[in-house]
Length: 336
Image (tube, rainbow, N blue to C red; front, top):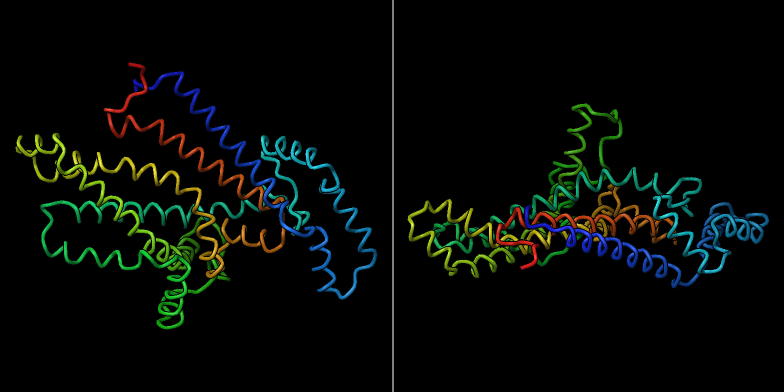
């Protein structure tokens, strides 16, 4: 990474923090544009459950003061920015006295363990399928078979989830249809718990992999077509290099750069895009937690989840940009 300059690193770090600030400002404003009062909505839910809540008006005023919602909007914004810098995201409106960072900490491992792994598997399989489809020396049998892997590309995650629940859950009974692990399984680093997590996570992961694999395959196929006629490909073939070396080191290595960028940018959409998948399967991840925050008008919870998504996306984009020279030695950040 000798071409990486100090000025470039500082510029990228500045863009990193600017992205987080702009994103945080947007997620602070958008929930407050929605009609209604989240504290009043919470008290209304209590009244619906209990039939009557004494002193509801006084309770609303006390809770608004407790969460700082009675302060001017600018004061609320400055407090939000200050707390975000220290990852002090406050209390959940709907799950008080639980703190937002504690709720996110419990949901984040499930999202990373299931959805991010499913995305990486989809990325790897999709790029391999796309590269093989575009490779001129692929046997005709595989050329005819591989397009069937792209059939489900236009189907949303949650639609495939419903189909898989019906076929493999209710129909064949191979997999459970909800939850992250068995009810009577002891939680911990032991084989029964790991086996139960894998068993429960297969269907939601499969719905994401099958639905998104075609996106990566089509993108990789297009990039492979553009690199097939490049001079370095012709030279490698003329030098008599092995076809496997040409395919991996010359064709795929150069075609995969835009795909890696798209992978980094897609990390931010993992929690949001999987919201309905986690809801369908009752999976306790970030997407399901975000759904609960939206349904309950929980401002602090929504802000906390989206803040983590923004930080993760910006960090992934920063890291990808910094390691580009390792993927392609032609890329340099030195001034010429």
